[in-house]
Amino acid sequence: DSGVTQTPKHLITATGQRVTLRCSPRSGDLSVYWYQQSLDQGLQFLIQYYNGEERAKGNILERFSAQQFPDLHSELNLSSLELGDSALYFCASSSRTSAVNNEQFFGPGTRLTVL
Amino acid sequence: GESVGLHLPTLSVQEGDNSIINCAYSNSASDYFIWYKQESGKGPQFIIDIRSNMDKRQGQRVTVLLNKTVKHLSLQIAATQPGDSAVYFCAVPPTANFGNEKLTFGTGTRLTIIP
Image (cartoon, rainbow over all chains, first blue to last red; front, top):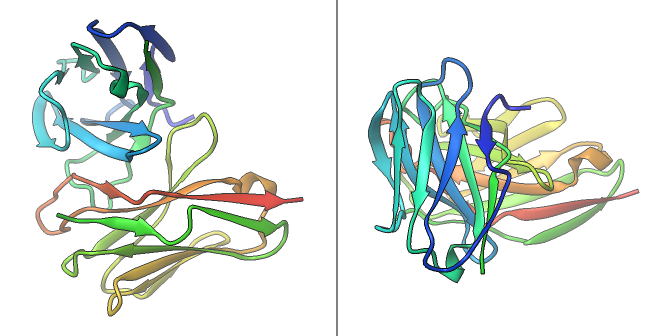
């Protein structure tokens, strides 16, 4: 158990809908990262927040957005869903901003299926 | 941008044998490398990391070798066990000096341990 929790575990929805994925980082971790893992694209970094502020952005679509709240939990919002958005979405947390010497602890993921 | 790839998508090894998983990267300025393990149904888990001022680093039953000349790193797992069956990713941040968090993951090698 990494200490990172994600809800829900599974999510099935229809095209055009909007969903919110939730992540609680390990106690004390200020950085939260979101990743998308699909069969054809592998593990892709989406976005990172540090202590409530956006820190780094990866290949995140404009239809997607995220935020980190004062209690450090984070939400990833996916809107106007398309079939291709079906994937595993992972949240990871770490104690600092840098990716160096700063192990990221991954949650169990949310499996999103868009029908 | 950075690209990271793995040489083999799948690898099968007899239990008790040693395994070697390879990874190539494109950015010669990359100076920090990480290996992650992802078991079925779980999020990635940190295994070992290495900085570019080293060419070898050992952990418990794992060794990472770095060849900066050919931009190649490998993960060696000694005396493989059934629990080593997983997908293994190498990950590279673009640069260590500026704390860039955009980890680029390789496509992964699925290691299967044959009993």
